[in-house]
Image (cartoon, rainbow, N blue to C red; front, side):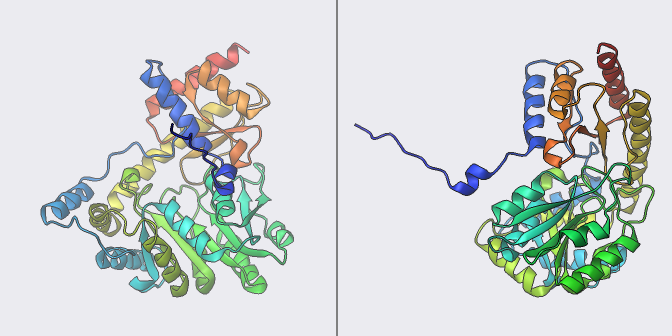
Length: 388
């Protein structure tokens, strides 16, 4: 007789919370498959097709037989292209050896946190934050420490609040500008002060700049300009070049940290997809026209959804970047989880509750969708509000 398996998962896994974005998206997809007319505003994914020249580069790579393993840290051509991009667009100087290519930006962040954190090390994270940041920190053995911002300030970060949150266990400051879910873009003055604070208190900085090209009313500046020796810059191809499914991320920073991240990747996934890497060379090298067109479309969508939501009485700050809004749903329900449920079940619109973003009383909507769908969402929300 076979003995039943007694499966005990690790404490790390038992403590790990699933991404609320993924949970909501999965439920929305299940409803759509069941024939329910759902409009999803949950996923942070551009609705544009990957640019033709990027697809052509992938096809050329396949035709040339570039389908084998690559170096763990990425093909030299892509690392060289990324280093050139960082110099050209961000004013940052890195050798290709100080650049590593990963399977999406998440892996770059994971590799960095596992390379840097010992049990109990604290990581300061401005909130509201992307749902994965605290989970990643905890999974790596660290302790996430939220540094709150407010909607009244446009979710701008107060350097004095960061200073007050520092303890003897603080090791890292994680930044995300432009931010998900807030759309906040930190100005040069704030970044200079944070860089000086990191120098003063011997902190390391991880800056996630995945949305750097989706900025409307501000200048996107890399904090690594002011503290290059203690900053890891993380980015990727997903948002700027509409390449979410290609899974190409990258990081650039101090060589010793990059080498440690490469060692971790060498024992986990090894190299990122070889064909996607060759596609990313084309994307990083020549996509200015595509970026300008998509940014103009996102700006138009942002302006419409912000105006529409506020007109409905759902207070919504105007984001400076990315393609999300954080909306106060008190007129629907004071609890954001219940509000999100009502919006899905009654208005047939999928949104993400702000709970896991540390944004109580709010939901996140992604406006990476057409103006027609945005108008339909506003109409559905009006019907829901009129029924309250």
